[in-house]
Length: 496
Image 1 (spheres, helix red, strand yellow):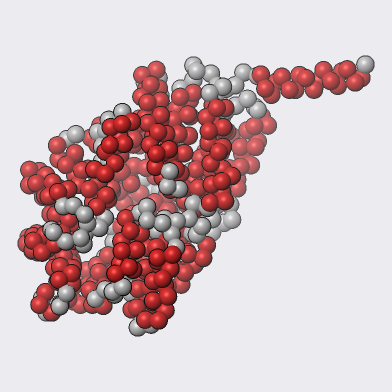
Image 2: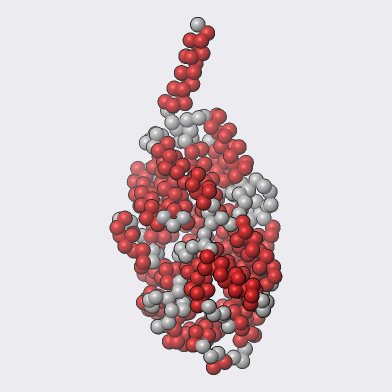
């Protein structure tokens, strides 16, 4: 009788676990877990997720949140061993979510988020076709969810981000977007993301960490509002010490915006607790921050730490190029050559910067030493120091046509960064004339920079003219990324 009772109890447990009504319950515990996950504070988040599952094994929100952990782990660290283990779980989680109640706005939303996250990981690991189909599924799931649950505002964050990104897809990938049946709109997409991020809606408050990560990137790279992207972090008083996701974003944008000292401060002052996901990117970013001020020995140390620890493929060739430059700037050609060999043998060429590094390595030539120093200082925001290096020089001081072009572009870029716009435009035009038929990126980037100057001045017709000129230049370095920025510029100017 006792055995029968135990067997019956076991059956009750089995039935409860496998046939109990699934729910999407965003409880206090799962909300806290979400907050920790979107700080990359995974150790405490996992404890909270386990607690939530103990409280309600039928709740599917922990399934979604575990996917966030795996997504950030794979996307930021790119470890092939983790990929082999974790990537198959994305599809399993979609199947679990599909067991939930269709009456919940999370039913379609959670599926879409997992699809977007899987697509992002697929891009990092070179599976572009799989990524395209997942983006398509997510796009249509969010569109349907918006129709079914118009007041569920998280739809706007994700669908808006997809809309804006699709609107800037480079020419080389437009066929994929057309094939997959997705329509983009930079204006509409940005409007949706902006409204959600700045809203007092309860869902916007819950999901603020995520929105505050996505929105500044879109401001910077899609709307070209670079100062506003960094200002957002200050205005919203983002915690750049205890939230590593926001610190990662702010340090990255500060480097891109040539505010190197801010980037160094963010990296140095972040919370060093072991509760957070360990990232090699801190060494990557600090290596650049040091290189941009010609702190060569420190830069080399951080770059070498990065390539020792990082398991992924993106930007590996680029970093080995920077290590080779460090040795070259120190006059150690033997070690510079050894580092250059690793550019050829290590990493991938998915990123434009890696393609450029490989092309330079195969050319078997070294950059002009003076131009390299000026470029690095300019890229770091040390514009006056960079201009001093080039003072008194003209293109006649350089023998190679490529160096004449780079010198002209670099002077124009420094003028631009020093807000000497008229001089910048005149010099950019010379760079276009010198380089529009060449494979270096300088002429296309010069056209892009002129377009951005005119756009900022409200001269939209002229801006479009130069964005189109940028797009018209073929077969040059950074083609995909420059085309994407030009397409985004045209869409902004036309209000599309």
